Amino acid sequence: MQVRLKCFAWAREVTGEEEISVEIPEGGTVADLRARLEERFPVFAGRMESIAVSVNQEFSGDKARIRPGDEVALIPPISGG
Amino acid sequence: MQVRLKCFAWAREVTGEEEISVEIPEGGTVADLRARLEERFPVFAGRMESIAVSVNQEFSGDKARIRPGDEVALIPPISGG
Amino acid sequence: MICRIVERPIDVQALAAQVEEAEAGAVCTFAGLVRNHSRGQRVTHLEYQAYREMAEKKLRQVADEIAERFGVTRLAIEHRVGVLRIGDVAVGIASASAHRDAAFKACRYAIDRIKQVVPIWKKEFGEDGAVWVEECAVEAPPAREPGRPEN
Amino acid sequence: MICRIVERPIDVQALAAQVEEAEAGAVCTFAGLVRNHSRGQRVTHLEYQAYREMAEKKLRQVADEIAERFGVTRLAIEHRVGVLRIGDVAVGIASASAHRDAAFKACRYAIDRIKQVVPIWKKEFGEDGAVWVEECAVEAPPAREPGRPEN
Image (cartoon, rainbow over all chains, first blue to last red):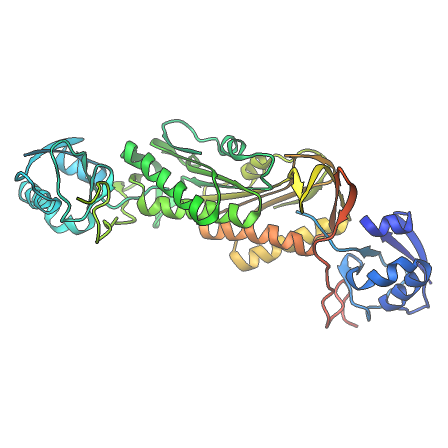
């Protein structure tokens, strides 16, 4: 399953794209997504703990399933305000 | 000794004047001033506890002496803000 | 530092502009507005009266307390007197600081202390007549005699 | 209620005007400004980036929390994105309430929560280059899966 993944701030600079496509197993979870990202962008590996994942604009834990068409994003530590 | 006494808000309506003159003994105190006011305006008697007196723009207790030329005022409960 | 009693409308954003500076990351403002009701009564308008000289002195005292407690020196306070209509700003406060905690605390402390120590009075005019509102009876400090040096 | 990400200058007093009403006796505003220094470095300018749709959704969530906690429904929040210069307002908040305590608490809670849950990032540009500032790592709620109904 292809997941369209929005990237922001530091994560956008790592991927070089506002949005990338990541392949995860059908019925896969946020944890699967994280694992694939670490393979593809090793620099993420040491930083993954601090990066949140949102699914359909809600922060989502590693067990959260990703379904086709979900809006998924990488959220590095924020600094608004 | 004549004390020029500034009156505000409710106290101004009681005295009918922005400033009145009150006679107290030479070397008299805020307590003396209060006593003379209660004689002259009996309506003050039941209210005196809630009315503060300032001497030279500082809230002053009953034992504070009043000297000739001091700026003295009656301060009913405030309601600014 | 602005601490004044005014007889004209208060422009809170002008106060905020006065306290801003390049070091300030946080600006907090407070405006106290005339409400259309008070203690269950409809209010048509208000009249504020001040013991002007002492009120401005007490505002400066409040500002000094804020500088000491919160390290906030960029502060502006204006309180309006005279006849005010519903929605008019009666008191405007602006504080600026490097960080938000101090800016909020300064602004909050200012309005709380104004209601405790600054000689200003409001008269509420409603359908049933007018009354001087009495919110806070000021007590003189018991031990010393402020306003004059100890002899 | 205003909750929005904007690309133009923020007018805090316009936000205050939006939340005022005849019942409101207290209006509190907060402005977060770009400072000329940060963590010991001189800052020349900033760039703010937002995950716009989620940021506005999270701002509305913050507003809902404020309504529930403090009963304050008259709230306006704007956060600016793009390139900001020293002194520019990055975030503006205005809250109005019958009484001052709720107005202050609403405004303070809003800025605190924005820094915790709203996906916005700032990049600081200084003499030594540029860096994405990382202030708050967001944790997903552990037990449930937000964003989708339980199956």
